[in-house]
Length: 307
Image 1 (cartoon, rainbow, N blue to C red):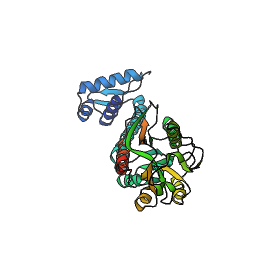
Image 2: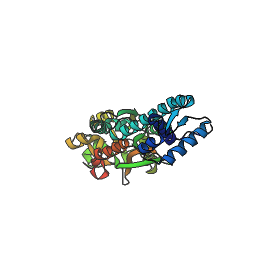
Image 3: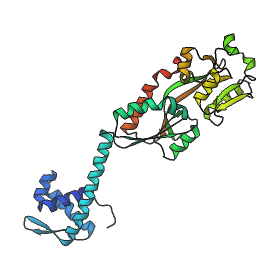
Image 4: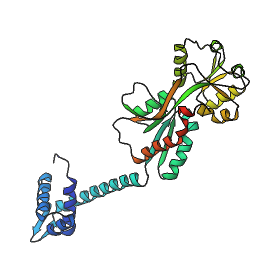
């Protein structure tokens, strides 16, 4: 026996064994008696042994047939369990959802998405892997997460990216900051002003550095922090100018605790979205997660940045 056994032959064999009749088995399977007979002959040829003794219109299992029936029924049960499991995964929301997300997304976006997701698919097991941009790419390529909520990656030909919204990085300062009193950013002061920036190892820091390098501004006086909340706290104390997306500080901007100004004549925009490996067909749970992310970030677009 060199080839893989045909599941249809196994089902026909088990049905004939149970009904002790080719005719009755054929009716149950909605096949012709000839088709069932040919299937059993092909199965016996494949196995190299006789499975049935034909006694008139009745068929009885041989010793080899009895032994093979145990294996065939076990295989058919496993196949049915696999089918039932997949149906439950698709129809009942069972299974898992592995999501990677940046620290910022984990703090400001993912919780509300997961709350809604859990209400809709309470039986789905969720695993969240926080990490920076490079970590999310690593997790995706190593198949350790299914989706990653992140900034749009460059040069990643093996990934699909579903854009959700675009934001703009801007200066955020306290109302007592000199720029707030002047009503504008004084470009000549950017290089010497204390800037409060996100983690130096982050993708966002690289974007900010590249932006100012292109603008001919050298960043030499800055504080780096790994928490957006910590950045806002320092900025509200008037200890520097933060570089943040306004949606992260929406309550502070609406209350007047912070004031927002553009980085310069040219905008520094970013695109947020969900990435996953190309070639994957997303199951319903992952499709739902992306749709919930889109709904949750509907007001985060660039047009809503100037609060």
